[in-house]
Each structure stands twice: as C-alpha cells, then as structure tokens.
Length: 459
Image (cartoon, rainbow, N blue to C red; front, side):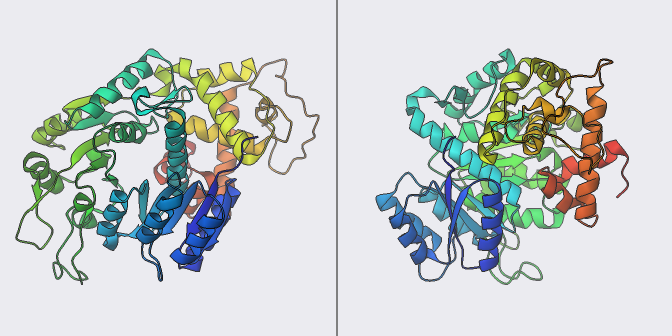
C-alpha cells in the first residue's frame, strides 16, 4: 500500500485547525497541526511534509514568510494558502512566491480535498516527467483519464491552447472535468509561474459578484470600510478561470466585455482605471450559442471568450473510458481507505458501461467511492452491488453471495434505491439541511438539488 500523503495545517484559529485535521484524517491523510508560522517552521525542519495548508495572516511568522523559509530547505513541499476575500492581494503575493494554490474563507472542505488531490497529482507529474514530456504523468495525460478518440483530441488541444495567448472557452456538461482542462492549460503555459484564480460566476450572489471581481474603494457602499482588491488584481499576469460564465448577470457581462477588450477595469466606487494582464479561460455547461440567440448572453462577449473552443464530451459518449476510470477510482479509494478491494467483475463493469451517468465522471467517481467505502476488507467490489435490496439495518454476512439472481436484476433501479436511501439518511442526519447533507455525501449543492428533484423529494 502506498504511504499516506503528509499534510501540515497551520492556522492561529484552533477551530480551523481542528476542523481540517478531523476531516483530512478521515480522508486518510497523515495530518499534523501548528498554531503559527514559527511552530510550523520547526515541524517542517523536523520532518518533510507533502503539503502545507497555511493561513496567510498569522502572528510571529505569516504564511508567506513560512513559505519562503521552507523553500530554503524543502523546495518540493507544496503550499496551499488560506486567505480572506479582503486579503486577495496577499494571496496573489503568495502565488508569486510559488504557492501552488490558495483558498478563500469561508471554504468548503470538499473543495480543500479536491485541491489537495490536484496538488498531489501535479507533484507526481513533476517527479515523473520533464517539462518536455507535455505533462505525461504515470500514463495519465495532464492528470486526466481516458484513451478514447474524443479524449485524445482534447489532450492534443491542451498544449496548443497553452502555447497560445488567446482566450479559451471550455464547454461540456457538469462533471466532465472542465476545470481540470483549464488548470492543465494554465500550468503548461508561459503563465504557469503566476496565479490561477477561479471565480464561480453562479456561486456568488449577484450583488457581491461585481465587488469580488473588480474590487472596491473604501466608502463605495455600506460596509466598505477599506479598499479591497478583487479577483482581477489577484490574477494579474496569470489566468482567471470564469467557471459557469453562462450564469453571469447581463450587467456584469457588459463590464467584463470591457475588461476582455481593453484590459482595463474600474473598481467599484473608484474613478481611475487599472490595467490588467490576465488570460481568460471560461467554462460553461450551457449552450452559449443558444443563450446568445435567446438574448441572455452578449454576442460580442461570447466571441471574445470563444477564441479557442474545447468541448468535453459527456461520459455516455465515450463509454470506452469507463473501465479505466473505474479501475483508477477503485485503486485510489482503496488506497486512501486502507482497504484490500478486489477487481471489478466483468458483469459489474458491463453494467457500469451501460449506465447513462448524467453526472458524468464526477458521478462515477462518487459511485465508486461509496462502493469502496461500503465494501468489507478483502471483499470483492461486486459484493457491494449485490444484495442491495436490503433495507438499512439488515444484517450482512462475510459469505454473502456476490452473484446475480437467476432471474437477473435491474441495476438502474438498484442504484436508484441505494442513492435514495443515502440521501434520506443524510437529510435525516443533517436535520434537513440540504447543503450539509450534500457535504456528507461528497457531492455539490447543485448535484444534491438535481437528485432531490429526480427522486421527488420535496425540500
């Protein structure tokens, strides 16, 4: 079994340290904590860490100071910085000092896990290949899985898009891996040493989105007690990833168009313009051509963003990639959970290949994670799928049959029942809080809403 990745959590707020420590240990990582930069520095001198998650603002030695000191003797350590929205300029400075990524408070622990996985994948890529290898790490181009013609076409497009300076629009359904492609383009471009900043255009309330994107001046509105630099400042000389750009409100589409065209912007409440050197990569699960035709998205902005287009096909259109994805996720979660899970049987693999997976790769990954979590040590993975007609609380035995009933079964119905039971259990345990239930199930709020609607659960 591969050794666990070691993580050091550094924050002067004990609640943050405890929360991250509990979560990351449960996820299978070897976790240590430190209350400030100096204590963290001593720990880093005493033992190597794969990743350091550090708050930027700390007493005695701040996060950027810690990063610089650790770089002197452990340059291979990956730093992920924690910052408040009000400290985005500090986050940008940390990226210039070779931090791998940063997260803003308040943050979602599932997002932390995703960034850790991406950071470890990036570290593996650097260790396994030279820059000339075009990101071929462990046989997984750019950290993505797939050998279908559609994916080979994307792997061919990524280095060409990275070498260009043009804006990129990535299209595809939710769960197809649009942000993975965006990160691959950035980290194989001439801007790779600078910041990769993500803004979810549909995840920030409209009344806050403008100030978060452009920043604001003190006194611009009630509560603006000091100047604040926005995402455009943080991404200067780097890449700004506009996730779900199709959800951008019309008023902001006009203002974003000016930035894309003129490379200048004006913070909220300011009178002077600022220049920015940002490359824009946008992504959407909508048909922007149809949105333009319907008058919901500006045509001029669409053409400015859609210089290079990369379309990610849904998983149902590249079913030949499902077996390798299943094997990859099975090994990944078995390793993280410390389980000895056998290979997937041909029958189960065929069933998975026939599933439509409306949630695409993300849904498949979630299904395999649940399956490995429910599997008993040394029990083959198919045993998790067999006998799922049991109601919660029914006893299971180690010698439970893993075969298929003589009359066959309906896998989609079985999986729907499994999903419904877990959703009901999560909602009950969370007291009906949908967001908390989604976190417990390891899915996004949007995915949870989709599943509630699919099962006719009123909330």
